Image (cartoon, rainbow, N blue to C red; front, top):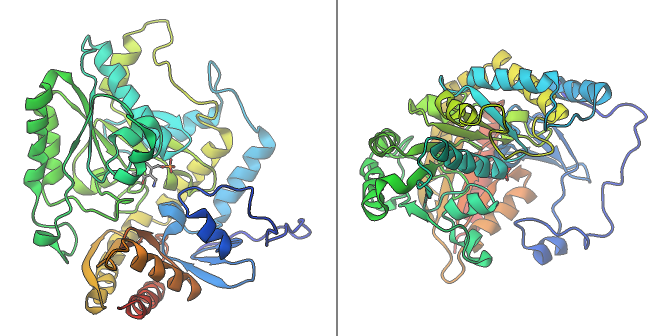
Length: 452
Ligand code: PMP
């Protein structure tokens, strides 16, 4: 379906196989293990990566939940290339350029109604920290500067900045780094294997977990809490779905106590759940919504924060004539990223990628749940074009079974992702049914091969 990019004739061909792996310190990777047997990707088109040796690898993860429209899309490449030759960069403070305003309007047109003000960042982490800072500035602008408590959720992931890490709830991501932000608390996570294992779509049990916010209010005092931040559907922790009715109840609890609700839609944005944003699919609108990844189809790094008019106006009107928000990045609204974002939004509209996800959802659900009988599978979860297969850990070796499955899949030509003993799937939204079948078949074989 996609016209994809090929390298221009005569372009210099970089050496695809590096001869020295030592200088690069790899993020979120066991460096010594990786460098002993590196897994490299050198080219990508549509649904498929190629290794430097030319071996095809079917992309079961859209990169890192980000290449939602598939790899190498011609329209996006052309838009970036044209902008790079027109103007490489313009300062983002006290200056602007036309594309940043166009990109913001285009984003505002697809965010839930009322979230019409767009602040640009360069990543999901920066979007999370920006959202938290805007929440604090909002309360201060309204004379409620004592509202400084930020509430996240166990097993939540909001990137690696100090704000996002502090409200995040994955222990391993926090323990290395000291005391983090003060005045942070967490709601319980919603993962409940005892009640919800093998649910199709949203699990039935657990809406009442949102009421834990009332306990936090009792502890801290409602008038000290600035915001609650959650992923409407938690991805990085291994695909933890919101129980039916949970997000509605969380919204109501925030409203009761004057607390802002922030949705981190860094992975759920841009079609992944079958709507532009999960907020739309779930019918719950936050006060602030963060995005990144699929915004530019990952072709250029970019993030953004969509903010309600009320929050924007309170801060902007609160400082007439002066700088209203002491926050921003050199590359906020970078011209190349704006060009990529506009082309990406065009593609999503022209190919109705959210609609495509909704029509593929039953096929996807049946395919991932067909792994139910594979050995050591203790749960399967799905929503939109997201899936997770949870495996029982090897005794005394948490994560080892899923990592072995991941390596087997890569060797067999399919890219999956693992978190602990959970295998997560999030393919590009252009996937076709035979490719779904291939991912599931290769994964099933790998899980079977790793039985004890
Ligand atoms: N929030 C969520 C929900 C994410 O899934 C991620 C990345 N996986 C981030 C924030 C951080 O994004 P980045 O890596 O672009 O900083």
